[in-house]
Image (cartoon, rainbow, N blue to C red; front, side):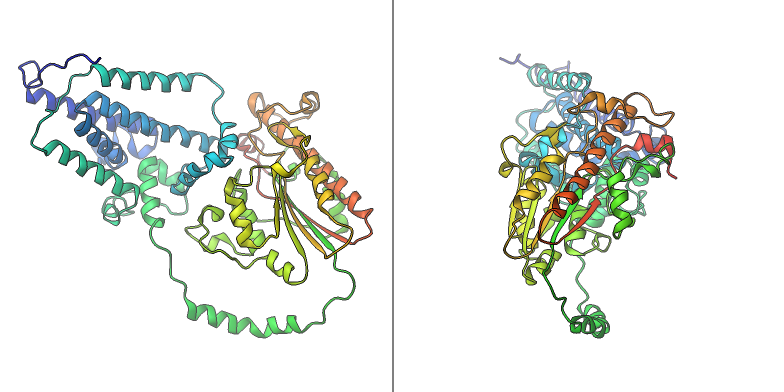
Length: 503
């Protein structure tokens, strides 16, 4: 049982001392938040020069701590719990910056709903391998428990409803921040704080992570821009003659080819890195490029966010024109979208998406229905013995499944295959460690960076080999085929890029 708390109205706990304790903890909260944040705009020195920056960055946490204080009546417990929860946000931010090179944004919190849909399996690979962060978290939780049991209250239990009213008011203010109430824009705006809409990193460095989240939340989290129908109709009218000319062209005669699209996880040609200019990690891609159409691809993401590239390819809609669309499959509100898939279906194609992962992750099951796929073959539909290489399903298993799904008769087929073998993190042991360790790296890349680059290149070579195998297998079929192959984004190997630079 908890120890009996002393009477807070006794001389041992005078009102002035209790107020001083709360103010001291609030000041410590602001200073420690700035210390953990590390941004130049929220340092201790800034509390004297530009106090609005560190205070605004700590304000959400202070509101939470205040609500907890009114509820629990314990000061150390309330500020400690609020700081621990805030620390978790900063911890996740550190992981994102380390792997993707950009700080947290409000839309990243949509990933919480993906944790039970395969997201936890993916994200767990990026968690620290060292025990110290987890021990620190356990220690913080232990201190919270001790404070709950043994800390004397600093607020009276019976206040005629004032304590509960204060708790409700502070909690409501905190929740209003989370939902992006526009009134908070009086504090979190570009005139009061530092906001560079084109750079979350710079905004975070000057305004602090928490303020940055609030700034972007209020800037882009509100309503959607209303479409300008008049401008759209004018554009359509201007383009109509050219479109009608194309539609009047005679249809191609002969058998329509099967179309196989491979969206290769994190695929790129390493020869664009200094030290790899004369390398040839993708001989099949280079050989096929000489006999077909090829070129560079501009993608809307780096190191992750596959569905951004995927959405653009399947719909033809560029995300640069949608300010609020960070994760399109998680934010889709239409049950049906115009797409390449629907266009091919209108020409008699059967359409299939194929991916060796959880179909619920990234909301692909629902999204692919809206985009128009007839079927979606995911991890559970692959053969029981489909191999993994590293953390994820091998590209060889994907090639096998593509060939299994292709029919030798019936309508032409469109298969959209999403690989996953080369997905990060790249500190997971592959199936053949000696093969990985034999891969050379440029000078200056050592330690963990070397290991991660070698692991990535190991999987890259497999992706290229499977491209070559797929084309050979398709060439043996009687039906004509077209293959389209592209990488969704660069792998998250930021340290290696900084060391070598690009050609």
